[in-house]
Length: 360
Image (cartoon, rainbow, N blue to C red; front, side):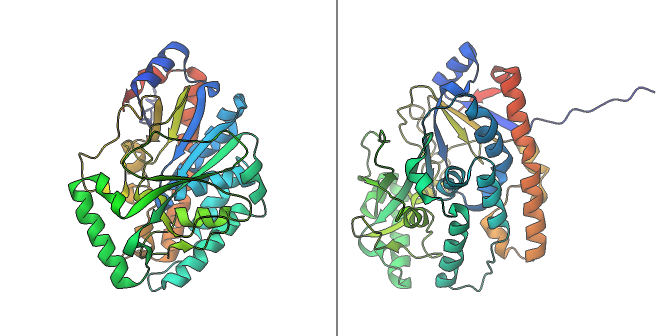
């Protein structure tokens, strides 16, 4: 009897900017080409990429040791901080385990959410904060937002009035957000610095150290109305600092890459800011992403997961889903993500990227 084996649909979607596609068609995708890796905001969606992170950081990039920029906002910065602090294997696994078992419930007050978030961050970093400052191969770059005017306040009336103003202003133009917040790019001091071309947002370039890096990471993930703005950061200008994803959700920045920007992402598109999600026309600038290779879970892969998608922050309060069920579903999603890493490494071995690449 002849057995017909059905091949699984691809688990990955590969998109590339024009220059990146040319480079891959000429020489394949080589670790030596990769000099920048962005990490998007997106809460627990990030742990849905655990297997891909393990493959990229644990097996692919070590093929060519060199200093690389890891540029993250919110959970993207936390993902990278864990890798830099704890190593390419323990870092992603620790982040996933801590997020899966985060003791969040919908009746929690903001101060309680802040407490468990800081405890989670402490577990991600361990006692290795010095690694974030001195790591020879990875230049962690944290993106946060410096709140202005009323948006500095966590008092309910002031905060929600600011958010209404932000939403209305953003509907007219993304550039109007500069009246409410400014970009912060924070990184270790004693290395070449990550910088961008000036845009509509005032950008502050600051340096973190082992004593304040946890506060900067906390600020980068501080969602307004969920956790308070981070204030009084040591060795930093006075201010109220919030989630970096508010301005740079998927980090559509003009990367000055000399090779390839390798972007493991939970989506196959890049949305500039968090408030741009409701506007389909707000997409990435092709010039910014010319050297980007965007690697994301395919629709077929996502449909195979519990709930047909990656873990999401709303799962904590999803009607009909208790904590035990959520934990089991998230564990399954993380376990399945090994398929993402395996498929990526297979493509690296075969160097068959051109047949799968779609325009970015």
